[in-house]
Image (cartoon, rainbow, N blue to C red; front, side):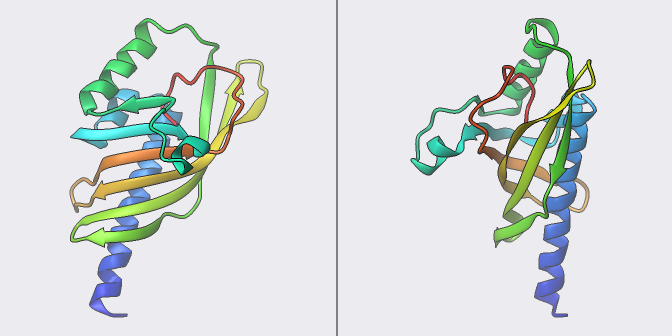
Length: 162
């Protein structure tokens, strides 16, 4: 194994670990900690595949800073009314698409299951993450995270991050 291959595998592991932590924090409703996975001047979008493919900007969720992520969490905690439910993410392998030093662009397929208090579980959302990640031994962070979703019909409003 060459040094370049080893470095690429380390970057892939950083990206994979960050995505796993992202899913864990959402699934465990640790959203305040979830926001800390992003750099302060981040971008977070959840956008329909049709809009993404057509280069349209309309997104179900759009935040252009960690402050906006935190505002969204405060709103979710204090103002939004929605049916109680839990998420469970299932992630595919993270693949590095490109790299510039310690900054990588990665892609990961995902499925989010939603379980309501009555015990019924349904597929809530599926798609792919396209991430720009600042990799670091101490803490990798998202510069940009785009959840491009294939699911066109959702049975409840999107209040939590995907």
